Length: 448
Image 1 (cartoon, rainbow, N blue to C red):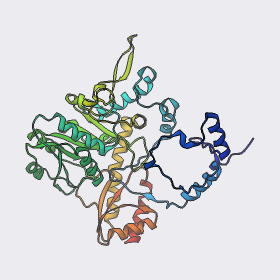
Image 2: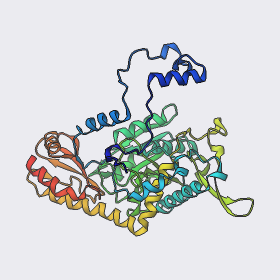
Image 3: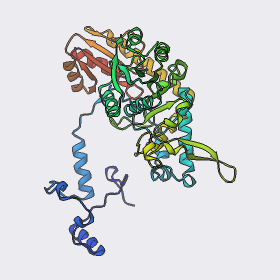
Image 4: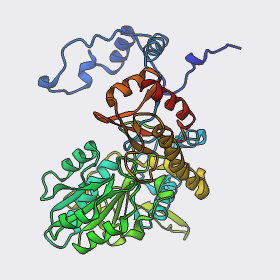
């Protein structure tokens, strides 16, 4: 029996290096003189220089990468701001890694993808139950693009001539940039409304909103983790000016916070990848749910249930005339990279938790944030949380000393937090890092 070192195991995609002689033999077999003949690249965009990457064996490459990655700082992250990490059970990796899921792209052929289509139908059903809205899709890139799609939908369905999209002044800068990009080339414009103590200033919003407003966007929880307590009033403002009310949230928060449909939300967007995926800081799964009257304007894929020729329940992608591969000129959006596999993982994670488990996890996000804020607030020169609100996962901390200097000292102690400005930090706690909160507080006290 041969012993295999755990660092040399053959997992993941196979690495198949070949020598110059191997390359020559393969080219001879297909009747070509060089690898360049396999491609038709215009000369003006060809890269002629040497990449400077030395050829290595699989074992040599693994050794070099292991050495390089070992130089990374081992930090415990207390980072949030739209990217949240929750523990992903190993069951999710095992099930979602099955070949019938990994090898499937868009499920255009229902006769061979019934299992995957059923899983996506269940995902949509979970989103419908959590939001209270009757239509959900399974194909958005992330929360930012979902918000952009919501604005475009508002521009398409609104009967009046309104073109203003109102967003809170504390909206994450990256999300704002994506939204601006999505409405570029349309008549829609993005404007802000004030917030007070971390949440919507409803009176100020009512003054800003008018008949030219197409959509009002609010978040619960906000980018600072504050929980909105007057969402129904925001919905009323939108209704008064005949604008759509779009609410941003995430799949864990929906397990505990106010149901969006009950406060008048017309569209719900946000991150569904808070469950099912570890934090990727760039890859996610956009949550998108809306009212049935907007069904034919929903972007992305929709899975429907019907019957096959034998009268048995069957699943298929439905209402595809909205999509670019059917009627390009009438397409709602061009979403080519399907997020089905990511949605599958989220559905598996929600199902694994179950209703009680999801509520318990969401409740923990409130309790842990409150407890950590109280510990930090006991330190001299610290106020936490800054906003006099209930918080979900994260909160803002004000420090008398420069925030960047404290964050630097925390990093040296093995902790990462967000720096917002000269005297404000943001801290996020979930089930993944909750066990390290006492150590974080001790490092905070040392830094102060």
